[in-house]
Image (tube, rainbow over all chains, first blue to last red; front, side, top):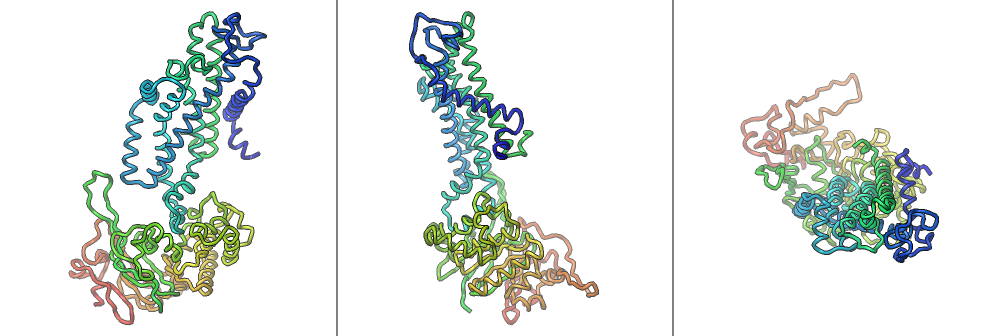
Length: 277
Length: 321
């Protein structure tokens, strides 16, 4: 109980983050089951129906139920965000971990590559990559992950450089442990206290980026019920059907807020000295 | 006595370069051309002030660092050239106990797993055998059985140091390097750990390389003592002989600094002037000449060799050649 309080209910923002994030996850699980409408089913007789008894969040210009599109779309949006963050983190952790431990020319080469990536605005770099390889959810995930891994690589490298000087790492060496095992069994688990909060916060950022991609037409394509794509489509009807834009917007807003607050809370719990940075 | 390790002209230099494009070609000679022998069953003390290269030397003998030059012969092979599997096999024969018991244990592992891990890595025995041996080691170092499932943060400094000793001992090594193994502990715990180390030596016949700056502790446990200054051996002799009759001016100053627990005693402390020279530009000739009151012209020009001054008492000083 104490641990749960420490990580998830530290203070009001932290509790808000936990509750909102849980709410989003709950919506992802229950939402698709709770609706009777197919998210892709066109019903031209019920175009742009305002929120009400038959359609709680209303319908879009093709008569598709917005609640059901948001519910199914949560899997596309959150799934994209999660995939981006996990891919970027996995690659970043491995690359940063090896660079930090090995040092020397490998470290130099890898960090200069990171510098190249970080010298572009990241969303811009991702857009160039996505534009080059084509639109869709897969390319979006790839493009965003490619532009984000240097953040994780640099963070993990920095931590590894500190941890590898600890005596218990040398003592692992002194009993004959293989260097690869030292990196993955001893050093990387120690970095998780910083990486997990970063991943949690990263979900929010990735969600904004992925939705942004869909909004400008690079990500998920209509009629895929992705939140960003829905806002993009709905923006044409913003005056006569404002709910069409506002409701997906609120979902994006809440998800980003929730996961960012949760990430902050985890970070404070694992690194109290970072609190005021 | 049986020769265990033969250390021949071992050196470790660090570059003073500050980056890939730095033009600084100076080197720090952390360990500079040191040779000595370790015999089975003895306890060798290495003393000297902070930064003189004691720890670096100890870790070089275990091949935890890559040497710049030199060889360390063990069972007829140069262990400093070992790599991969050969090096892993050598690890069985020599272990280390660290100075700081707070950073030398992995905070995420249970005590039992920390102690048993060397066997796991060396693939000596299955899970149950390893567990049994870890319990046995807990008993040897005087820790209760329930420590097996505790984490390092639940233990005191002395208990952690016992865990460190148990981990080093479980492989039944011939040599254990005690890198200031007791200096982080308070005095009563120190004596417990020292007694434990001596009991273990009697029981298992291990050899210790005892790195310390606690001169009284060294006198208590060691058979032979090496005095180091700026990465070099300045004097090497049997323990009692060295404490009674230090020949090198640095050793004389060092041993005169041992506190005598008697307020009436006549203390003739030799006070050294100046600081230890910066090892980046170590002085030419004898490393100690900048602080030596006996220094003559020759000391500033020629580095003295380590020579036998009688009965195996070796000293590197022009005054005694």
